[in-house]
Length: 135
Image (cartoon, rainbow, N blue to C red; front, side, top):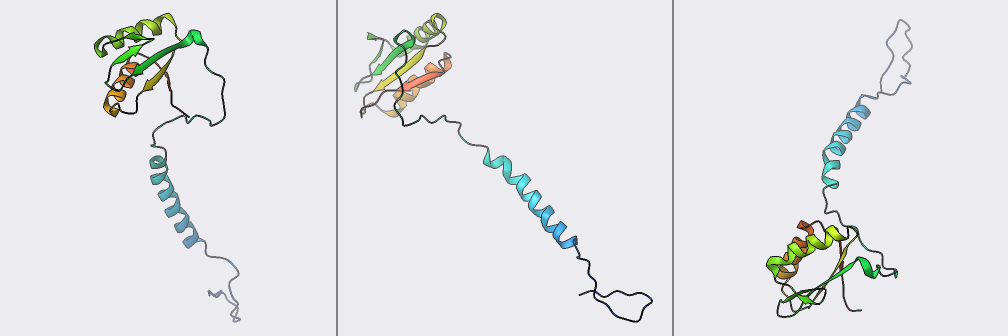
């Protein structure tokens, strides 16, 4: 506890608070916050779907992309080789900018094949991609 040192001979306790340690602690906390805040925002940006039932997309804006158990790809019920899938999706996207691609893949299909089809769709500008699953 500090004491006043003035001309009076009475030794009185100081009634003022020393804020220097408080300021030091606050500055350390501020630095920690500034350093960690950017790390918290680096995450995968995923818009999670709601679990409530939604209305189906209009039929005129849909394209069905299916991958069967053997890895064969069909686009709107027409067999499609992987090499020309990008061009077909690009043409469909130009014709309908609101195009939604519904991806249906057999559970036996390796993930790499599905990821490759998704990457082709994304490369061609398809921003709406829906996954069709069983209940």
